[in-house]
Structure formats: C-alpha cells, structure tokens
Length: 448
Ligand SMILES: Cc1cc2nc3c(=O)[nH]c(=O)nc-3n(C[C@H](O)[C@H](O)[C@H](O)COP(=O)(O)OP(=O)(O)OC[C@H]3O[C@@H](n4cnc5c(N)ncnc54)[C@H](O)[C@@H]3O)c2cc1C
Image (cartoon, protein in one colour):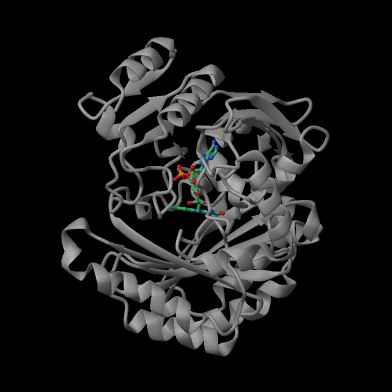
C-alpha cells in the first residue's frame, strides 16, 4: 500500500477516507449479509462528485480491487472487496423533489424509504422495492420489482437520466439523448459501467393504497399457492401481490400474502375480501396505508448481520409441480429464518419493449427468491443451509424461464446471468467493453 498516495488522496477529499485502524471503518464495512467478511484497505465516503473521481483515479493508479457500496443489500456482497478500495455512498444522500415536473433528483446513496419520505409530503411516490432500507440505486440499476411496478413499471423504467463517473474518471450524463447506449445499459445492467452519483426519476401522484398482510397456516399453502397461481396472470395493474413463506415467532412456517391495491378503494375492498377467502387465514391486517408505512412492514424480517444465501428463478407459470417443490422444500427447511418470496411481474413493465432497456425479461412471470438465513453462530451447518436454497432452485429449474433476476443471481451463476439478458446480452457486452474495458466495475457479472 502506497501511504504517500493515500495521504495525497485524503488531503484532496471533501469526504472521509477510512483505514482499518480508524474508528468508523467497521461501521462503513458492514453489509446486510454478515457472512461477507472482506476487509478493504481503504474505504472512501465521498461527499462530492470530485471525491468519487479522485477515488476511482486512485484505485486505477494503484491497481487495487475496487467496488461501490450503495445500500449494502446485495446478498453476495459485491459492494465490498478484499484489500482494495471501496467507495461507500452513505454520505451522498441529497434528494431534490420537483413537484411541478413530478421528478426527483436523488444521489446514489439513498434508500427507497428516504426517497419516499421526501416525495410523500408533496403527494408523490416513486417505484421502489418492497423493503424501504434497500439501496435505491443498487436495486434500480438491476431492475427493481416493487409494489407499484404493475402500475408504473420496474424502478428502472422510471429513470429519466443518470450522472455517472466512468472508469477513466470522467463525468457524463446518460439519458435518451446523451450517451443513449449507456443509458440503455444501466437500465438493467447493474453497477457495471460507472458510479451512478445521481439519477433523475419519475414520480407519480399518490392514490389510495390498500395493503397489509394475510397469513395462512402452512397446511393451506398448497391451496392458496394454487389460487395465487391462477389469479395473477390476469391480475389488473392496480394489484401487486407479494407472496411466500416465512416463519411465525413460534417457529412454524406460514404462507403470507402481501397484497397492494393502488387505485379505486371500493374495487380494492372487493379484491382484499376475495384474497382473505382463499383459505382460513390466522391473521388478517389489511387497511388503507401510506406507501412509507408499507415499505416498513417487513423491517422485523430484514435482519442485518445474519448469514444469507439466495437463489432465484423466474417462472412463466406457477404450476402444480413448482408448488409441490415449494411444499417439499419447506418440510426440509434447515432454519426458521429462511424465506421464500415471490413477486409477480405483470402490467406496466410487461408493456415496455424488450429492446428498449437492457432488462431482459418483459413477459408476465413469477420472480421467486429462495433465501437461506441463519444465525452467524450456526456456522457448522453453513453448507446445509446453503444447500437448501440450491435444492429448491434446482427443483423448479425445469419449469423456469432460462435466466433469472440479475440482482439476485450470485457471481458464480454465469449461465443464468447470460440467459437473463436474452437477446439483449450482445449489446450489453459491447457497451461494457466500450465504457469499462478493464472491468473496474464488477457488479452483476455479465459474461465478457
Ligand atoms: C431485504 C432485501 C429486500 C429486497 N427487496 C427487493 C425488492 O423488493 N425488489 C427488488 O427488485 N430487489 C430487491 N432486493 C434485491 C436488491 O435489489 C439487490 O440486493 C440490490 O443489489 C441492492 O442494492 P444495494 O445498493 O442495497 O446493495 P449494494 O450491495 O450496496 O450494491 C449492490 C450492487 O449495486 C452496485 N451499486 C450500488 N449503488 C451503486 C451506484 N450508485 N453506482 C454504481 N453501482 C452501484 C454495487 O456496486 C453492487 O454491485 C432486496 C434485497 C434485500 C436484501
């Protein structure tokens, strides 16, 4: 490590530079997945675009590994590296709302919850993921499925432009009219092309929102999943229905439905009452709610520092075999902290032309996440926990659309990542070579 170069960098920064011996280093290194232990040599907390440029130039000159940390929720820990330079965006959190134009200009370090907290007082919302604490830029660059997606598209379909620091340290704006190729690529291609220091995103006028949680005993899961599979392919744009398996505090698995109705209240009441009747729920909490409250609904299940492994598959249909595989896997689950999550993709994002952004799957589908979660102390059973998610993924692979959701595909899932971009892959690879020829930015591992 060149300490003179570090001192020079430090003196040029408005933000902070942290070395392992510094007080805030450990905090700046923490990720959602406690299993990721990498220790970068230097963590930089930029406060300006110039700080980001200086950090990139430093990493390049010193030939050090390099990564960008947004919200720190990539389960595979790609925002951290061993012995290199990390740009942690936690100080880049400015949000400017233009209520007249219905747009927000957001810096790269914000979370979905922070964007909504700024937009809601203006009667506006944005498309975010389902969980508020996840990094907004990281989620958006890889796609961004969320409760408002059926109404307004993926998070990435709402990006109007982005300010990006490239591998050579230059700063550019990417939009439909400037660097249009790069703008195409960042909408689905992940953090592969530069540091996105800010984005301009479309906002939407707040409508009545009816949402909550309906929990069924696991003995009814098969029946309720079959109904879910039947309902979703023709669901209206106003309905998002996040479903899956989690454990109740007494340690038993349960099936959850998290419906979100975004539109006419009377029609929403009808939909909710139909959903409650899919079985005999032991808990129903459905009510009009603010979008900000919806984003906090699962906070108790988003525990920082547990060990996580995730697998993902996308299915055009949730057929009986896939449902049987889910039921079988829950009988074999190795940890009461593990989860199965299913988002259904329909409505607005399915009407976006496939070749208009890099995101590679625009047909109606069920996006499934299999998340093994376990306590750090349970390291002796690490392999068994990981295997559970892998087994479930393998058992639905025959029914799955080739590929998967790139944001969840791990760095070793080369085949699935390539397939997930489908006919967009070649163009994505060309743009990667053009803008980042040395592969400085290692987000979703696009095959080269
Ligand atoms: C609890 C939880 C809930 C989730 N819910 C959803 C959901 O509802 N919908 C959904 O679509 N996905 C969801 N995800 C997946 C999520 O989209 C990805 O994990 C995403 O990568 C998280 O982004 P982050 O910024 O928090 O993570 P990080 O680990 O900080 O970053 C993820 C990747 O993006 C890159 N990156 C981040 N910010 C920037 C930037 N400004 N410029 C360049 N590159 C950047 C990083 O380098 C890294 O490669 C969820 C994940 C978790 C853990």
